[in-house]
Amino acid sequence: MIRLLAIGDVHLGRRPSRLPEPLTTSTGARVPGPAMAWQRAIEHASEQAVDAVLLAGDVVEQADDFHEAFVDLRAGVERLAGRGIAVIGVSGNHDGEVLPRLAAEIPDFRLLGQGGVWETAEVVAASGQRVRIVGWSFPAPRVEFSPLAQALPARTDATTTIGLLHCDRDQPGSGHAPVRSHELRGAPVDAWLLGHIHQPDDLDRERPIGYLGSLTGLDPGEAGARGPWLVTVAGDGTLGVEHRPLAPLRWESLPISVDDLQAAEDVHGRITRALDALHADLTSQPYRPVAVGCRLLLTGRTHLRRALEQTLTEADLTATLYPQDGIDYFIHDWRLQVQPTIDLEATARGHDPVALLARRLLVLRGGDSAQRRRLIAAARERMTGVIERRPYADLAAPPPDDEAVAAHLEAAALRLLEELDAQRRSGP
Image 1 (cartoon, one colour):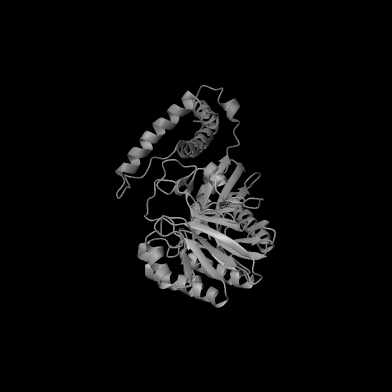
Image 2 (image 1 turned 90 degrees about the horizontal axis):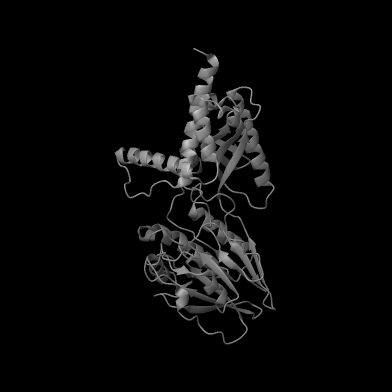
């Protein structure tokens, strides 16, 4: 059997976003970022005695990271080579220029497909079993054509062949090597291991085709398990693919119900219990992260929305670490998604400002309609104007999408609804 460790986007040289200052202070040079994730992958490859490590591009964040990335990449490759483990990779849109330079300085690193041509390499196990790796590398930061428009090297025998490619799947017009799913399925390979998209696909299938995902979560948008994949090729060519979530940094959304909350301050106990439950879940799994960033999602019905917002703001949750058994938990932000205890449908039947606001909320929460589109368009126009008037505004940034505008509107409407309802109940 041949064993391979396949690694998606590493982005050596990049620092994960939203890390709190206490975390970087407590870990010192051991920031739980790409370099630490790379080290964990190397250790795992050695422990598993794999025959080769495969890198699916964007190994390096950018050309400016040459020296920092070179130290980490060379040390890892040399350690693997010392164990008889081959390292084979392709370059992506981030490192199409720098990775060939790095590879030229690291003799044990085989970079496939330089210059945008398909190239093959063989991995040979001690038993004599072989696997063919076919790969293509970005010749420039932007590639607006499909690499699969070029013919892959012809298969001359039944040797299991694995494709290694950095690409943008089913995104016509992309500048990052756009490919179609039917092109991948029709290519003469037994599996495709893809880089570029940081969300991993389900690769546990007879013919794996999909994204490996990022080696470690780089920002809160990359929630959930991240890490390399152990790929096995049996003597009869049967493929097995298993995710190994080794990422040192993990991002999670943590739902917390505020139903039946008696006082706003009681939310702290619920946050603690939610963190404890998350810790119990993560420590029951075979691989532990070093740090876990949490987004608190407060849900349910309560009349304490304003008090909760004040309590959470004053607590400054993002400035605190919550260490447990060697894992540092931190809260990078929180979102109030609570509903008022008001019956919106009943309230909306009235004729006062509270009723009007309730009707607008029901429109926002309903399906697509002309009225909903008008509300969102008017809000987007005002939001865009506010952003443009801010100092240092990024005028090239795209306007917020419909759902982001709707979420902003709903949050504002809920706050106002509670205030108006409280005023109405208190009387003149």
